[in-house]
Amino acid sequence: MLFVISIGGSVLARDLNPERFKKYASMLEELSQEHSIVVVTGGGVAARQYIETARQIGANEVTCDFIGIDVTRLNAQLLIAALGKNAYPEPPLNYKDAELALASGKIVVMGGVIPGQTTDMVSAVLAEYLRADMMVIATSVDGVYSSDPATDENARKFDVMTPKELLDVVISTEMKAGSKSPVDPLAAKMIERCNIDTIVMDGTQPEMISNVVRQECAKSKPVEGIKPGTRITTK
Image (cartoon, rainbow, N blue to C red; front, side, top):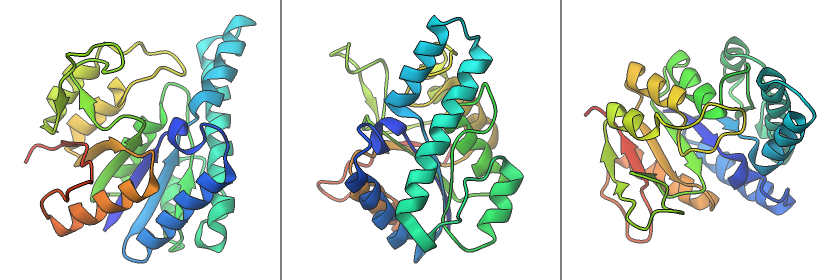
């Protein structure tokens, strides 16, 4: 099976801990023994800091997007370094290059592509373009909520939802470089358009990602202790 995995920068690179990169690399290497894997890395805190500084010195939003893209590609290069010979050696710069890289049989790791697209959006477009079996969005929250659980104690988590329901939840997200949301509106729209089976999940521990992927492949019931996240599907 082919999986496109979006790993948020706040998950992978929140403090640039080399051991964390090694742990995610080990998990991806293990998964790649059974599946084809394409990873899209986010920018995280570092990207938001660079973007905010750029805004304060007068940069427009497109320039801020380019800065954020550069940070996501730096995170991709760090993960590639951790993967060593198991990874395609360079982050693809566009979707066609990602398809060519995948043909190498290696794990493909890339960052952002063009201004106006978050890495979740890049993942969704890739999942459609590559005809992936599933997209996994590994973030710092354990699924999609009706509102921000950090500020609303009455926020309700969705275990299963349709792409339309996902879009309704996230549509109010402000579309600026560095905006924070479990899934951004454009990615949600792409998921709705293409009916991409998607899991939004807590990816703060790499084993959570591998456990959920294996569970999905086996079509088994949730295992105790494994947070399955939110499944977005029309089925």
